[in-house]
Image 1 (cartoon, helix red, strand yellow):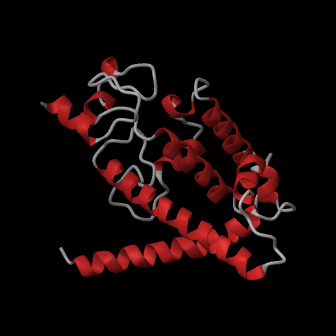
Image 2 (cartoon, one colour; image 1 turned 45 degrees about the vertical axis):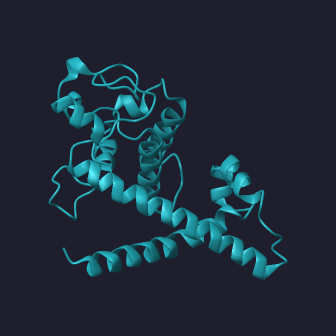
Image 3 (cartoon, helix red, strand yellow; image 1 turned 90 degrees about the horizontal axis):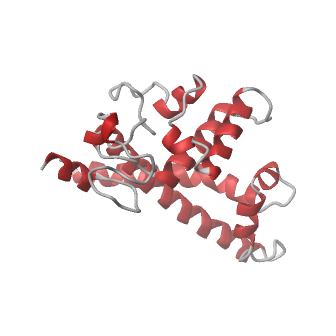
Length: 206
């Protein structure tokens, strides 16, 4: 493996994420923005430590700090989701298409939502936050919520829901419905309060 290429990819990807995230951070810190109106609680949380806008250097430094923090966080999540998609640890692929080799197709979680299909273990009524996200996504697709880029807005919400829950079951249990438990954070291989991961799949094969 050429580790130099891998390191360059990671650096370039984080830079691209930071360039995409910075305008959203600034919008979130603007009390008059649409983003602030849609996500008031989250935006107020970010505002708690924000310097005054009159202190431009301090405010810009705070924006840079938030941008770097969330770009790094989402880079790690995206890479982790890709790994889990490929190895079957996600029930519905989050950052990959149904055909893992097709780099141009929609991520399956987005394609499924456009068909009106949602994994109830993630978006079911038992998980109120994600049920609300599902309703928001439906409102976007139905044109009830105005946004400049409906598809990106919907996908961002779907990814947030998936990141909150993580994977629900190991690979073996996800292909054997009789082994699934009803709680979204449990797997029949091993009772746990945290999302399942590769350790569970290894256990199921042993």
